[in-house]
Image (cartoon, rainbow, N blue to C red; front, side, top):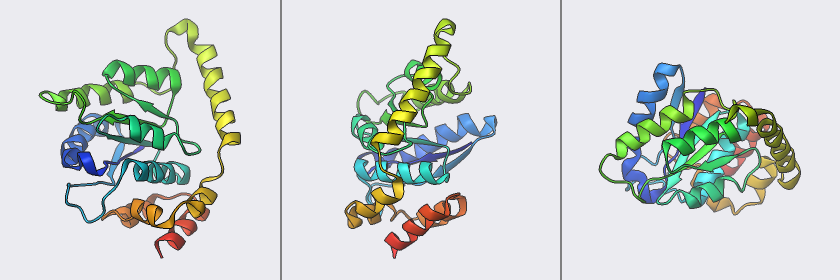
Length: 212
C-alpha cells in the first residue's frame, strides 16, 4: 500500500518527526510512504488544511495513493476538508483506539490527526502507537465480531451515498478557485511524486492543465 503524508502550514515543523514515525511502523509491513510535505514552516508552498483536502482527494481518486495521513492543529479542519470530496472517507483520530476502530469499523482511506491539541511530551509515541493500530490489521474486519456484517454493509451504503452526493473529482478541480488548487499542487516534490504514481490519465491531464 502507498501511504501519502500531508502536513499543513501550522504544523509543518512536525513533518519530519511524523514521517519518521510513520515509516518506522509501516515500512516493515511492506508499505511505502510518500511525503508530500509541507516539509518546514518556511516552505515556499504553503498549504492550508483546505488545500490538504484538495491534495488528499486528488491522490486518492487518481490512485497515486491508497491511504492519506494528514491533520492540522486539532485535526478537525483537515478532516472536514477531506470529507468534502468524493471517494475520501476521513476519520478524526485522537488515540490509538480511535485508529483501530476507524480501520476495522469504518474502513476509511484517510485520517486527520491533532498535531497541536494535547500533543506534547511523548508525541512521537502517540504517533507510533496510532500508526501501529491503524495499519496492523487489514481494514474492514469489523469490531466486535458480532457486528462485522452490519458494519460492512453500512460501509457499502455510505460509499454508494457519496457516489451520488459528490461530483467527480475532475469537475471539482476545474470548478474550484484555480489559485487555491494550484497552491495545493505547488509542493516541492508534488509533480515528481504524483505523475510517477498517478493511475488515472484523465485526472493527470486535469492536474497538468491546472498547473500550466
